[in-house]
Image 1: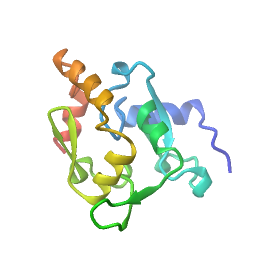
Image 2: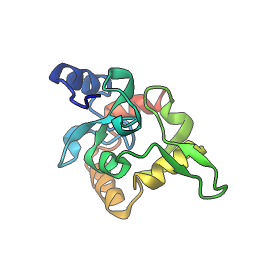
Image 3: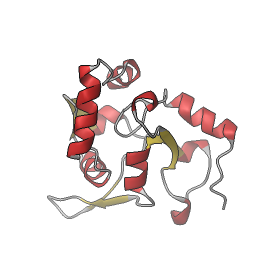
Image 4: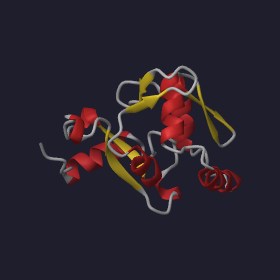
Length: 146
């Protein structure tokens, strides 16, 4: 099982995402380290390197996610999978409250918490972008309208 992502597949994933992190919605141009291709289900857990299992993610979301596939919900202790950009609607699991991502579901809660999406440093970054009129970007606003 190979985790190699060809240039053509990488381009498909980036274009399909409109160059946004599919988790926190930051635009690739607005994050110093750019975005990477993420295996939604890691190869470690049997995920394939194919378009349906790949997402575009900023370095911070991707590195925090690692090979995890979910976590326990704080309030109930039940296991919940992470948000899957290929099968889930972003607005069903998150809302944008200023620059903070507010979970709307157990999936949203574990994704926001484990990926550190509302970590103070990340909020500062998004606030600075907001003051420049860059967050949410035009592409992110289109995603929020779905």
